[in-house]
Length: 476
Image (cartoon, rainbow, N blue to C red):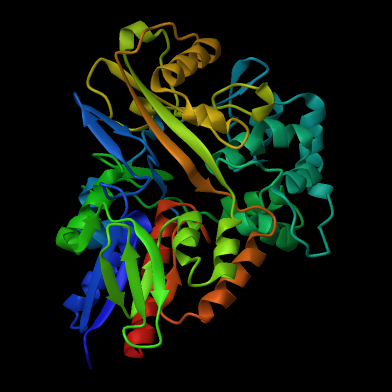
């Protein structure tokens, strides 16, 4: 059998996972050559960590959910499991900014659903009519027509408007930098639909789930405690750096922007053209770039596919990390941070108390706060000049937390068109994309544009793309 060639486009989490999977296939004896092309001059995509004066600053994702297995599996594969870091749960509190004050999220709230009576009854976050309305969720009938709906519609229907405004929108929509009025429930939170159908109530479902949870086993001597949120001791870039090293950096070409993919009747079946004039022949192409970028270089190959890829909406956001002398801050940062509902009309979506949530993120005597701006309703804020964006964040922290201190350092990271939006119709778009892809054997799409925005989801999609490519090329 002649040597097969695969080109991977995009060097973020999905592309690096593809590259490392291809390296393992070669090591296992596959007659295979591969290359990865990344348009930027760095690898890692939206995972980026800065190390400066003993501060560890994540510009994009700062953690992953431990209930999803892919990140821990990858850490084990690349040999950095001992670098995993759990959150500092001794100070685990989350606040919601509502009616111009910070309210502690009541104990027992799971996702957006109250599961403990006393903390919920005594919280100042909700009015009494809202508490009664949320409690009535136990008696709201199941939706029976099977049609998709928006997250906002679902929450209003089951838990009421105030729950949507003060809890679901900042907690759930904020994770996706999305507008719940546009989000497809079936594409983003199918688990809620399953709970509704099985239990007839989200409250009943979450209480049942909590009751079935076995007590966590005592950690093995020297083992790293597992928390709901996990990261790495040196920030999230530790995992992408380790993946790049394990795949072999000589195969990962940066500064290589793809202009088009040509499909040919002869073998190899594809020719990938870069803007610098270089070309790469391939029997299979794995595209991990964002859907709108994929559309730009797939348009000549399949215009209808490109149109649908281009129709997936995206939002822009930015993170601003500020470093302070702890004694000048005037706030103890007891907690993981706060969320800001959109109805408050603030310019922040949220803030993480990074030096509290993750031990070792700031040197002794210092504090690190990471703020989020932009999102579906304030995208223009992500394009402000650095000084203006920092000033905006400082103004908001002064209003919300009373922080008057001057930060010693600031880091700004912009993610323009950085977060895909799984709006109503997203699953239908995916069905169309899957059908069109079948017309181009050897072309595979992966990454956060399609079926999961988390870093682990992206890695899993990249590995799945390689599995499909090897099946096609080697008949496995």
